Image (cartoon, rainbow, N blue to C red; front, side, top):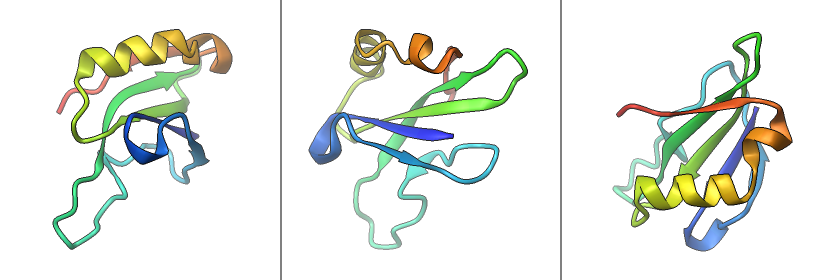
Length: 87
């Protein structure tokens, strides 16, 4: 699965994540109380496999992450359907 980042210093960056489910925060556990990117959207293929996870910077709204994800056409690119992650 691909992790896609919106906002902050790694805006528009991507990386591979291992596992079948994305972590709620990235990095998962810094232990230092630093702000982390928060999971906003999960894109699943027709067979239910997680294709991508969209993470937003700590200071970005859900609406802005959704707008940018739509603009970047992640659903089309990964042939997956996005759903908002419920915290």
